Length: 153
Image (cartoon, rainbow, N blue to C red; front, side):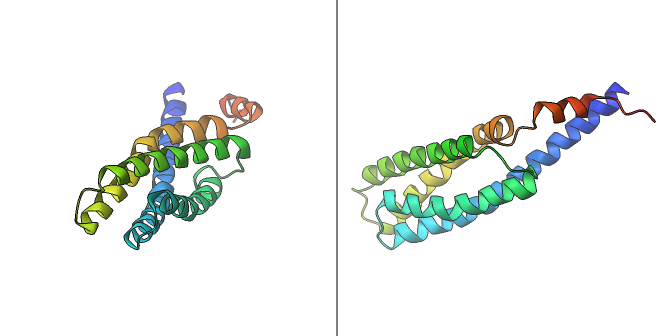
């Protein structure tokens, strides 16, 4: 009986991870395209980061709330996590933008700075999942206790 409960829990976690991954991939593609286009057309890296963050954060929140976790989350922790992620990405892309200035090719600059934007969110991907799962979309204690209570048949 315990093994079956564990198997269901593991399967549920795997499904949650898959849904989070799918939501994140969608938001990343939208955000990445926005960043690359802004930067390509001469928008400063910091502004491109802000535009890209906004274009990705909105669908990401809606997908995570409705599709991944299926419930409303705590707004303050969510805001802190995503704004913190945006600040980290802004720092990394600004530093990368500064570092690539000696390169003559605008195409290579765009690839490298856009790559640093993608890489930053790639590194933050797992940390954000853990924070969203434990802080933002965590089940209330009563719901957690109900999940562990055996059902009489």
